[in-house]
Amino acid sequence: MAKHVKHIEPYSPQFGTMIPLGSQKFLRTCVLWQIVRFVAINIRMTILILKSHH
Image 1 (cartoon, helix red, strand yellow):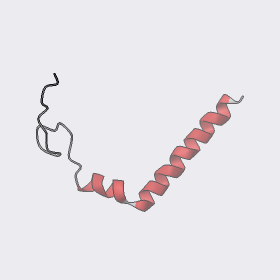
Image 2 (image 1 turned 90 degrees about the horizontal axis):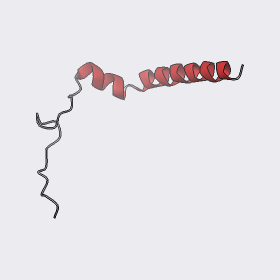
Image 3 (image 1 turned 90 degrees about the vertical axis):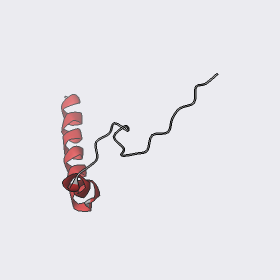
Image 4 (image 1 turned 45 degrees about the vertical axis):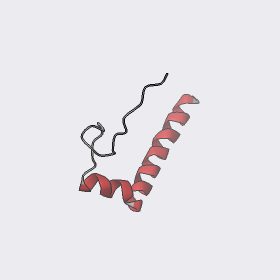
């Protein structure tokens, strides 16, 4: 039979994940930063694809 699994609360010390600080929360929620990252990643992917076609 399956053993009962104890529930771990998110963001508790037993959870094992890092808690984002203020600057990280800002970067994750800032729309302008997300647009910049989106454009940068797309440029990098385009360059990679163009190099692979030669």
